[in-house]
Each structure stands twice: as structure tokens, then as C-alpha cells.
Image (cartoon, rainbow over all chains, first blue to last red; front, side):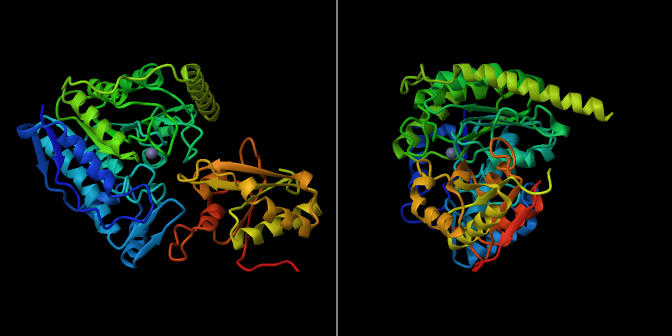
Length: 346
Length: 139
Ligand SMILES: [Zn+2]
């Protein structure tokens, strides 16, 4: 199978001294790709700049103007986590465009697996708010483009943080299913099980909030027991993965205990959900330990390409197995409540 | 909702504007015999931050000056951006029925209009919101 990706972005200008969301991250991710020695099985498209029309599918126009003006004015801190520099805005638009270019190439070929390595990351950016290191929601821009082409899109988010931006953007959209496993409580605080989507898209959101210390077996159990039936019923025609690697046990920003081998298992789960070749793409989100990022990117893409070379062993035995039952119960209760209210209102 | 607030949540990040907001909230709560909850929004980079400890001295001064009983004061530390954390403070377990914020938080850049937490809060909050202007003092 071919890996369809893009030329690396020129992202050195988006940096702030001491900030963990730094250019070295992408070098580590690309090193993970190089470790696969794909040679002829690697296709790199040129990233392009996403157009305003492509961005306003998911972001408010005035928000784009404001962040753009802030960046071109020299930038600074947007909040305690999120920064922009003079170079951030053109980079962010190219990062979003790289995702679009990869997805377009996958559709044209009808074959391969996609990999997008954007900076800044995207899943915390809402329609009108930059936060959590994110300016443009890259995976949402791609999902909205696919949706407008008639696809039913699953966004599977295994970053250790809840993708509040992606969830909010597609909250009431029945053609995009958002599934997230994440540590909870943790930034951004959203992502409880009772958040199941808007009235037009009930069951359009599946949140799997899991405790600190969770291991790979817990995340897989939650995905298999809670998310898989909803995904089956949704029947996606395209799968985009918000592949953050900050759930790795070496990551400094969170407390999950996953190994690179667990990401390989998660990648196989994602492959099984895609309805065919050329219908799956991985978008890098977080991941702040450079070694873990490199080995996890390599493990994820190897598994997606059906390369069976060994990885770190998968992990098990962490807390959270009971939590899976509670998530199921909470989802059911919320659905019942909403249906009862709808009945009453009729 | 009853005629006056019982639980006043005030966004508190230690900034000068937050101190002004907290002072207003404490003095008002003393008059109304209401409870005050200092709300801190913990960012992505602040996982282990403990604002109650960090700001203990500062808060002690504010409480003393306002003549407020510390027994009716508590902290709520929520994960996320200030807007979301303050909105969530109107629900369990805080159940705030009044939100108080300074006009600008610690990290907010004056150039970002849409980023203004206080204005977005005023737009979205299910309970009354008081925005205490920069530099406000009661005495
Ligand atoms: Zn993350």
C-alpha cells in the first residue's frame, strides 16, 4: 500500500522559546516516516494554501481576519497556551491546505493511506476561537471538504486531549461523526460521555473520557464496546484520524500510558473502519516527546500499511475498564432524556 | 431563580482586572450573604498548577479588605479556556447564579476582539454577568 503525504511544511517561523509545540516535532514525525523506508511506496504532494472558502466552511470569517491580522502584526500570546508569530498565519493556511491536498490525492487514486503533518495542530480550534496551541482546525477543514463532496466522514480522535473544536464544529451535523478517546479530567474540560451531539445529529458525537494511567487495552475496549456500534450504524465512507501522540507514556503533557505498539493497534482499528483503500488519512495533532512521537508515527503508519515489523509491546492493566460501562450507561440515559423531551415537546 | 444571588462565581487568574472583579464580588457577597467561588481556568500547560495555594496570600488580602468571611469562600479549578470554565460554573457542582469577571484576563491580548472572554460570556451565560471595568475600585 502507498503512503500519500505532502512535502514538509516550512514551519521554523512558528516557534516560541520554551514552548512544547515546536518545529522539532515535525522533524521527529518525518523521521518516523523515513524509518519506514518506503521508497517507491511514498507519494508526496505539494501542500497548497487553503482558500478562504475552504476555511469558512468551519471557521467564522471575522475570526480568520482577526487571527491573520494578529499574526501579520507580529503576533504574541493569544492565551496562556496559544501563540502566533508573523509566520504563523501563512503556515496555518498551508497546513490546512496540505490536509486538503492529501485527501484530494487519496480520492483521485482511490488507493493508499494518507498522512498529514501540520503545524500548528488543529483539534482545539473552534469556529471562532484559537486555543490549546491551535489556530485552524486542520482535520475539520478536510472533513468539511469531504462532506461537501457527499462523503460521510468519521473523525476518530485519539489525541490524549478532547478535540473540543472539532466536536463543536460538527455538533449538529449528521454527516460527520466525531469519536474521541481522551484523559478526563484534563484540558479542555469538555468531552464527557453525555455530550452526544445536537438534535439534528444525536449519536453524532461519541466521547470516551478515561482516567489518568489508562493503558492501551482500556482505550481499545472503550472504542470497541462504545464507539464501534455507533460507527457501524453511521457507516462512514471516509475516515480521518486526529492522531495525537500525547497519549504515549513518555509524553510530558498528560498521564496516559500508551506505547507505540498501542498506536499500531489503534491504527489497525482505524483501517478496519475505512470502507476501502484511499479512504483513510491520519492528521498529526499533539505529541510532545520527540522520541515517542517518532516511534509512534512509525508504528501507526506501519500498521496502516500492513507492515508487520515489531514495535514497543502494547500496554495493559491500567485503570478505566469500569469507566467504559459508565460511559455506555451515561450515553443511554442522555439519549433517553433527549427522546423524552422531544416526545413532550411534540 | 430567587431574587438575589446565592453563589457568585468570579473568574480569578491573579491579574489586576481579576483582583478588581474579586473585590467587587466579595463586597457584594458580604452585603447579600452570598457564597463566593473563585474560578480558575487551567490551561493546557498548567496541569499541575494549584492556584488556591499560589494565590493564597493575595486572596487573603482581598478577603480581609472586603470584610468578607473566608468561611463563605471556596475555589473551583476547571480545565479549559476561561470562557468554557466560567460557563460550566453555572452548572454542577458550582451552580453559580451570578458570574463576575474583569474586562480583560491575564493572557488576553488587547487586539483580539473575538477573544474577549467577558463579552462572549455576557452573550452566552444563562445567569447574570457583571463585568468589572479595568482599574475599578470601590473606595
Ligand atoms: Zn493533545
